[in-house]
Length: 68
Image 1 (cartoon, rainbow, N blue to C red):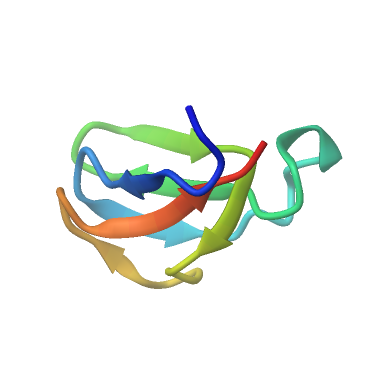
Image 2 (tube, rainbow, N blue to C red):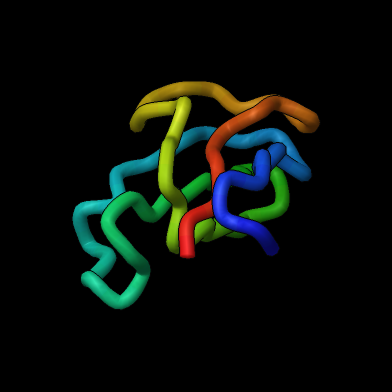
């Protein structure tokens, strides 16, 4: 996808700390936890992130823009 593409949440969840993720995922990886599905969703190589750890994410919400 093109750099700057808007990225929307596909499911609801909570943004959790990305401190355990290494540099292979880019400078701003985003980790979203869905407790009901017992799954984590990872967005890597994002240029701009609009949410922070502790935020609640709803399906369809703009959460980031793509990087390289």
